[in-house]
Amino acid sequence: MGDLQVSEKIVTRVVDLRSDTVTKPTEAMRAAMATAEVDDDVLGFDPTAFRLETEIAKIFDKEAALFVPSGTMGNLISVLVHCDIRGSEVILGDISHIHIFENGGISTIGGVHPRTVKNNEDGTMDIGLIEAAIRDPRGELVYPTTRLICLENSHANSGGRCLSVEYTDNVGELAKKHGLKLHIDGARIFNAAVALGVPVHRLVQAADSVSVCLSKGLGAPAGTAIVGSKSFITKARRLRKTLGGGMRQVGILCAAALVALQENVGKLEGDHKKARILADGLHEIKGLRVDASSVQTNIIFIDIEESSRTTAAKLFKDLEERGVLVMPESSTRLRIVLHYQISESDVQYTLSSFQQAVKGVQNEHGN
Ligand SMILES: *Cc1c(COP(=O)(O)O)cnc(C)c1O
Image 1 (cartoon, helix red, strand yellow):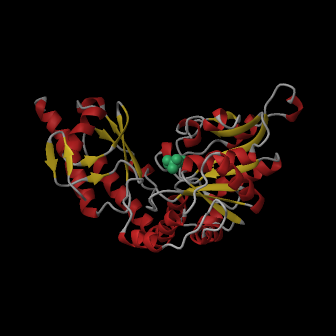
Image 2 (image 1 turned 180 degrees about the vertical axis):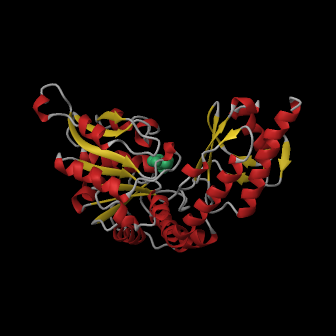
């Protein structure tokens, strides 16, 4: 990776673990972009967008798919299609991405009311609590109307934990029983499918719609796909235009996403393996707390113990000086996300950088 100027020092090695969104397009992606056959996709004529959407619908065993600019727009469109009557309510996790990190768009733009249910440590919500949150239609004079349940798989804020096929099916059954729709925020659904060892279409079988990021672990430069029934996608296409997400020769981006699908799904297992090696190593460092056994995919949370005499902010800076880039989550927590542009040697370098950074602080204090 390239040089980076950090705090006036030049470090020659950069290990970028801030997110799996930081990957750079490969030569193959750039070549595919350069030669992509394109046309106006707002008018519905871009052949490469059509190829990508056909391919993704097939992989997910749904009737149709739509390429959208971002995961945030994918979720927003999906929620709004399912909740097209004002006064609708969606049940979602209290630390879900849609609820925490998407500017509250479902309510500010969509007029949809969020009803949160507590996320357990493994990213699930208790089925009993979901059922209890469903509004009784007999109270319609005062209640919003529940129309949708949203799950997130893998669950980012729970450290990339995976929801099982069985759990997802059970939530799907509950939704059906009450006449509700089920949407899965599957920004990292391929990570979950690989970690669980199930085909991705099986994992989302119970869902009416899924939003899938192409620019996270899969490494495309931009874009998300949403999948669902033909009538869902027809409405989604219209809403995409309303929100300003219709793009003209978008096949240039879709060409890179097609390469990402072909070449990078198979690399996710390696990312998970590297995450486990890193988590096991970090677990051994005194002053850091890492629950290595809960690392199922490519995300690691690192808690800094008070006894370590460092803080997340200080450790972040000390690592940055060594060229190791991580994400501060709070005053006592850092986050690391693995991706395929991190090598095994980068993992070893990261471990020794953490060791030096934590030890350095302890030495300053005469420990
Ligand atoms: C990244 C992410 C999104 C949104 O993606 P953007 O493309 O950044 O808008 C949605 N859900 C989850 C769980 C994510 O990790």
